[in-house]
Image 1 (spheres, rainbow, N blue to C red):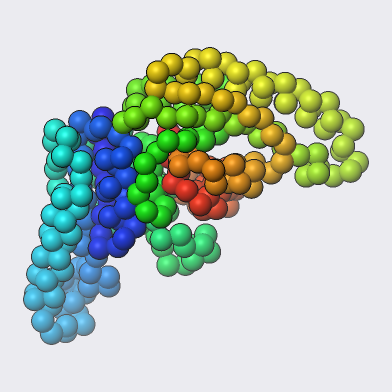
Image 2 (cartoon, helix red, strand yellow):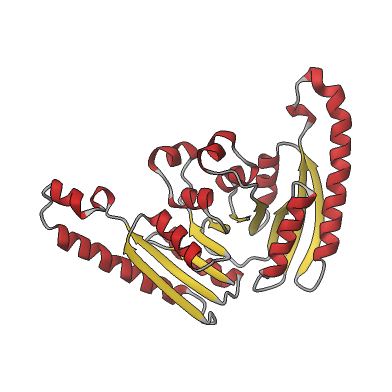
Length: 285
């Protein structure tokens, strides 16, 4: 398993590095730090602004980047066979994404500062940009690193469940975990009254299908690595999943592949969970 970890001097980044060792036994980990010089990322801009001491400023920022890489290296688990590092003057999110692509990473790991969606749109967020544009699965680490004993796996359809099941089988956790497989059927309270009669039969069928999906997934996952239970609830998917996630150490969801501004406008269950969950979220692609 190849993992790329985006790092900086924040506590969120240090937690992300520590979380990797608690969660996986990767074959290769790459620590990535993009040195952000802000508006002076380009020397041409600095020259145009006649910035005094630009070279010293750039050198100091690069040196700080190398220092944070070395500090994060000490936080990694000692049993990782290969640890690579990358540190250059570059926009952080795109540098992480480039590293993931060039190393053919299975997973990108980043910490989050829990900005609101509006704040992210206005000022940007590394975790937000990585989540939107990554071609591989993404782990968004929230809060302090913790041992993962209870995992909530949110499934929406049979195809969704099979993708998550395949990921868990191909990339096992470091230690056995208890997995709750949860599917949420949209509540009747979310439907216009004049549509209620037709929706009632749809809801009953959807509930039956959800029960079958979680049952089949539980049967497929059952084994030494997973102690599996199932749950089907009615309600708003994001709210219900986030509430259920409060009693778990990690939430695992699938991504349906919306991109860029289209995802921001249309929204998605996985993106909503990432923003509202109180625990770390693994988005599987």
